[in-house]
Length: 442
Image 1 (cartoon, rainbow, N blue to C red):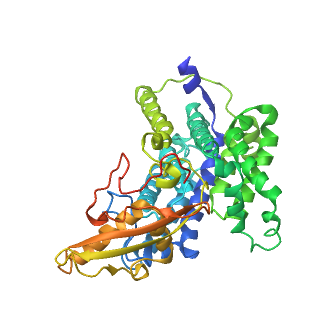
Image 2 (image 1 turned 90 degrees about the vertical axis):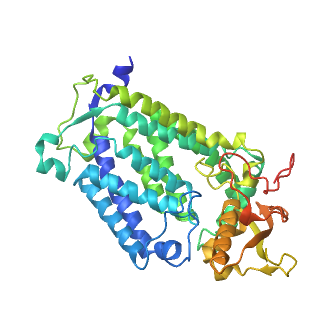
């Protein structure tokens, strides 16, 4: 049964055309990052980046290095699109994107994480076996079919992402329209639609449409009777997100996934009429079966478990942020606050406190990060410690931070008595210097 489910050969038109879309979009992501100034603001101008803790060796290249870095990624994306040295091009983009993803957190969003997962998966899919330069150069590579598991892994991954995104919205500030109201208030200056987005009906629509779309879109696309309607709704949803939230390639990447839901006959007829359509439905059990099944099980256990880790970490994740990343908690809250750092020289502990002017060390985007995120506060304290150590001074770093979630009254966030420069970072549990408020909403 499992062999028939996973290893039945099906027509590969959907995967081939997705590779073309995917390559174009990731090339646009890389090249666009240069021309929109993203690379400059995020990786060139800052004096240091807030890398994922423990990956300090990942640092931006000096000078114009990061521009060349992204240009090379863009070339890899185009090579993926045309199917030239597909495996090497995909591996190259994956490694380079992983470097960027883990190198900085000032521009973090869940879509960057999703792209990383997709890149990893695409390395193992036979997406270069048709309509590619590789096949033209070596016809022996040509195939018109693929095993069914190639589609199943993508659908399951998307189902996990959308389901968690929906369930995460089931909390008071989302359900009472606070989040939607705050999100739309930041778009009031948009021409034509800005005023429309401030209406209560718009907040209600965004609130419940967001929950229902994320929860139901995958099942509705899988069911033939609702597929076309679901696709039309998906077009509206993703174009709305593209216009309102301006989140780059990801609405269009989400639409590209639709090729895996429509019938193979329709995708073939629309995109690859000249290609022979595969109909034999052979079951070919590959030699890699013994590796594929346990690896896939481990992969999806991690994908299901990782977003749940905040339930075993004390404190509300909306407040502490511990367990927030890599958990598909998308556009769930707004964080604002004031955070000030001051140092005390250990050689003269009774000396006057010296407050740090953050703008002397951080970019505008980093200032927002370090004002509200506990890991960034801790990392900035380590940065200050190292900076003053290079001058022969041993310092303590203290933080005065008051944070607001979704516009609520500010509360003290960091224990002001803790020397953050010398406090450890706990990777797998809570950090005690983050003040929590038991049985209270943040």
